[in-house]
Image 1 (cartoon, one colour):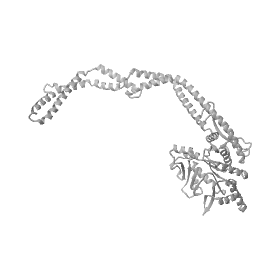
Image 2 (cartoon, one colour; image 1 turned 180 degrees about the horizontal axis):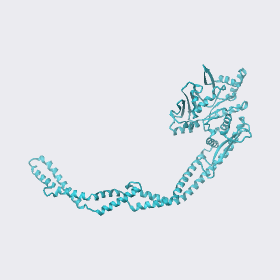
Image 3 (tube, helix red, strand yellow; image 1 turned 135 degrees about the vertical axis):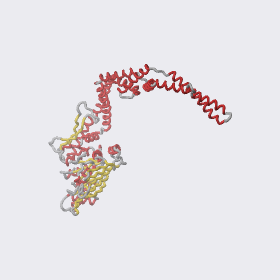
Image 4 (cartoon, helix red, strand yellow; image 1 turned 120 degrees about the horizontal axis):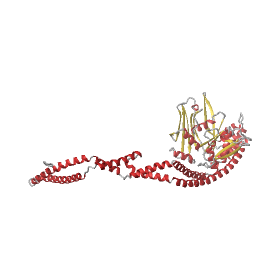
Length: 556
C-alpha cells in the first residue's frame, strides 16, 4: 500500500509531506483548490510523461517521492528482486523534473521511466483518464477475469502444456528444415566422413610424423656431425679425448699415495671415464642405426601433406582431425535417421497438442462461465451507480484455428455501454472520465475477492450523480476498502462522509503567490468540511447537524 507521498515545488505545491493509511481515504476541497495535483504527482511518480510546466514558478526543479509497503504485494516483491532493487518490503520511487530533463530512482538506484511504469502498474491502479490505468489494458482484463474465475492453477497447467508442445514443435521445424536440404547435406557428410576414414589418422600421429620428417630431412647433417664427434672422442689419430682422460687418471692414481687430497679428483675422473665410455657406445649405436632413406622421407611428406590439407579444409588443427571424425559420423547418423525421428516426433507433437487442448478447452469453459457471471454482476452494479441502462460484457475472442498460446485459446476484452440503446464498445473508448471511474468501481466491487493491485485511486467517480446514488457509491468504495487501500477525490458529502481518512485540499494566496496545502481532518474539522460541501453561502447549525449525522451514520 501507499504509505507516504512527498512533493516539492510541484505545480502550486511548495512542499507537502503526507502520510497515508489503509482503508478509504477521501480528498475534498473547493473547486480549483488543486485536488488533482496529488493524483498528478502520484501519476508522475508512476511513470507519466514529464513536462517542465509542472515545476513551481521560481523553482529550479520539482520532485515527487512515494513509498510503498510491499509485504502483501508478491508481484511487486518478485519484480524488485528480479531487478536487484529489493529493499526489505519497502519500495521508494523518486522522480525529479527540471530544465535538464527528468530523472527517476527506484530504491535509490537510477531507473528508466519504462521501469517506473512497469512497477507502478503493480502498485497502484488509477481509475480515471490516466495512461497507466490497468483496467484499460486487455492483458489486465484477462488477468482479472481469470482471477475472478479462480483459474490460477489451470492457467499454470495450460502454460506448462503449451511450453512442452512448443519445444517439440520447434525441434520438429528444425529437423524438417534439415530434412529439406538432407540430400545435399548427406552427400557432403558422406564425402567428408569417407575422407577422414580413408585418412585413418591415429592419435598423436601428426606430431610423431613431424618429428620423423625433421629427422629424415636432416639425416646427412646428423650423420656427419655424429661421426665427427665420435672421431674426436675416440678415433682421433693423434690423441682422442678418451685416451687423454685415461692417461690423466693413471698418472693421478699413482700420486694418491703421495697426497691423499688427489683422491676426490681421481674419483671424478674415474666417473667421467665411465660416462664417456657409455656415451661413445650410445653414439656408435646411433650412427649404426641412422639411415639415409629418401623413399621414407617422401612417404612421410606425402602423409603430412594429406593431414594438413584436410585440417585446412575443415578449419581445425591437425591433431583435432581425430575427434572431428566421430562428430561428423554422429551428424551423418542423425541425418540418415531424420525420417524416423520426424515420424516419432509427429506422434509426440500430436500427443502434446491433445494434452494442451484438453486443458485449454477446460480453461475456455471456466472463462466463459466466469465471463457470463462477471458481466451480470457488473451490469447490475452499474445500475446502482446511476448508469441506468448501461451494460457490461466480457467478450472472449477465439484465436485462429490451430493457433495456440500460453494463455489459452482466446483473448478477453471488457466491453461497455454507458447509455441505453448504445452498442457496447471497448472500455478504453468510453469518452467520459466519470463514466470510466464508475465502471471501474463496479468492476472492482465485483472482483474485490480476487484483488491483484493493493491500492486503488478513483478520480471524478461521482461526476453527474447525487443523493441516494452518491451514498451507494460511497458504500461501494467503503466495501472495497475492507481489503484494499482506496483513495478517492470527491465533490459529494455523501461519499466523503464514508471515508475512514479525510484529507482537505486548500489553496491560499500570499503576496501574489498561490500555494496548495493538504491536511488530514479530525472529527470536528470533518463536520465543518461536510457542512461546506452540503451547500449554501452560509453554514447553519442545521447544516452542521446534518453533517455530523452523516458521519455518525457512516461509522455506525
